[in-house]
Image (cartoon, rainbow, N blue to C red; front, top):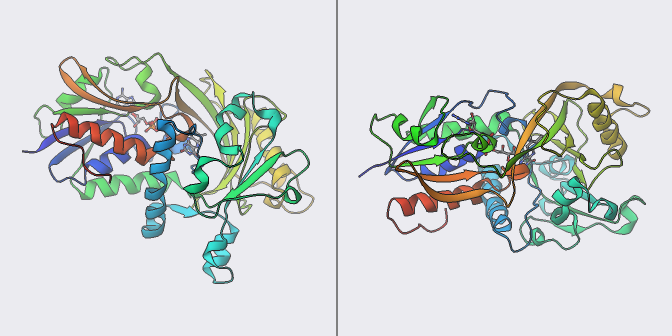
Length: 381
Ligand code: FAD
């Protein structure tokens, strides 16, 4: 007997869940969404993300488990499917590919911590990431603490490890392609109520289960209306300049909810300069002053972004952007529900970590779908 499933939402959460569900030939899947890969909209967070793997889940939490369980999948996709638009980032990798340095010498992400940031919005967001001896040192390859001699005076500690950077403009369509190959049908629609999704399955027959991956919009979606959701506004500048390694800092001196990170996307996706972490701020338009500060900070921490002696005029801007991270008080909602007689599995509220927790969360959502189907959960995918 086939199981008819509607996945509501085509961001990284919906697409990753559909991707895993589509591995089971019993599942007949429709992905239904207002926005699809290729769209840029303030209601659609996924295209705006960097996106990288910089774990922030508190040690011992379910968030920690989701991020831990996502790394192997991202690493495997990076290694096996270059067309997916993910790479191990940085100058060091390119050198290694020319066999000048061994692969084990790669360390592409550099994180700096300033203890004075720990009470700020950005500092709290990055608290787990920047602390010495974090849990993820056993997950990512080539983790090492930076010696004091390699730190600027204002930095209290720092670390370096191998990470990935995802070109979201390539990766999201890649996920669509993987699902389509397995028979998943994609449809555009705007729904007012989550239960209505059950009547939109491509077979014309009512779906057995709806997987709700509507991100921040679950705040307003009928049958969900989750008041715990809030936006954490992220402003970015995409440039053609390439600094080499990926860099993140625990905070800035420009504002408690401003951030400093740099990452170059795979496959010509440009370099993302970030950012901000502005809670409850819904403004969809880039703030020119904030953009200036983002660019100045990036050049200060990575002067190699521009030619010697240049300032922000040396940056070759592709676009300014704003996305709203779907933050949820208490963490993402990955659970079963029943709304107006329709079985629903929720998978939303992933804040600033939707990519780096995508496979862990989607695996949990798939296990819940299996429960709805009355099956024992499968072994991990
Ligand atoms: P979304 O991408 O918002 O998708 C929601 C989907 O639901 C869309 O398809 C939408 O059209 C659909 N939908 C909503 N309501 C309805 C409706 N009523 N009817 C039909 N369809 C509907 N994460 C990382 O892991 N690493 C990073 O480096 C990173 N960097 C980021 C940088 C920025 C600037 C931002 C903004 C975010 C960043 N994130 C990062 C976070 C990440 O982007 C989000 O957590 C993730 O994209 C959320 O994905 P989602 O699929 O849950 O939601």
